Image 1: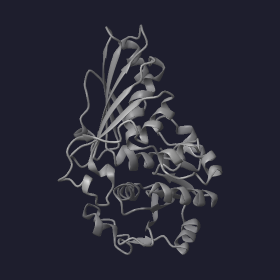
Image 2: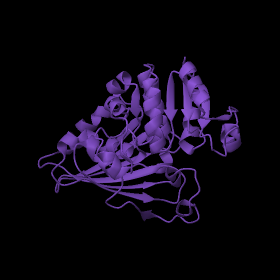
Image 3: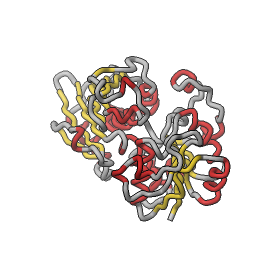
Image 4: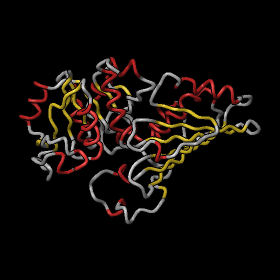
Length: 327
């Protein structure tokens, strides 16, 4: 049985992966941690999330003593922390020879030049970064199993790449267009006026400048046009992706390409039937649907995931199971 420390456990994603690990008979929770200045330190997780009333573990401050205890007792660390915080913690725990599963964006780009542009900081741990692998679970199993530093993908990239990667070799030179809508939990637990449920109205944001655009493009190997939207629902993502395929591509070619998921139980694919957010909320699944117009070579793909599950916590859980070889 592997022991997992969860840092940033008071947030939506941290609490979600705590529940998944607590329910996994192959894993045990070493401890739940928050920052030393957190107002939640000392509280049981169940006090913050009554739905997890069975988890009475208290949130401990991440002191130097706590970090030493994690190194002594844990096999792995999950970081559900801010990008700049994960930047330092991931490198430190990696250097202590623990497996690190980072849910932030601090290790998603191999190129250090991307971080000042998209995350606002210089990447100060290039050695750790050189060993990090991208944790898109259905596509990078071997690398996830072999590396001790796994950068769990963003929620929008997970939905988009799951739909696009199978047909990447069929894409024409026309840029894929991704329009994706997320529930407000994607903005995190901290209160902000523009993400208050009563203030949210369906709207695009980060137009032609969202940090998930280069993440998608890097992993796809092709530039994309990505437009995220904030929807007035709690959780889930629906991405509608429009692509033009190479001349001569047929529906049979597309069907064959998506057969890559035939042995991937968490991804379902249906032709001419599009997914709904409600079908994936609170599940680890990605539902894909597609329709192709052979007259003009345009393909439309629908991809639905739960942003807190497949887009974060359950994909991290997948990566943990792959890494420790019991998936």
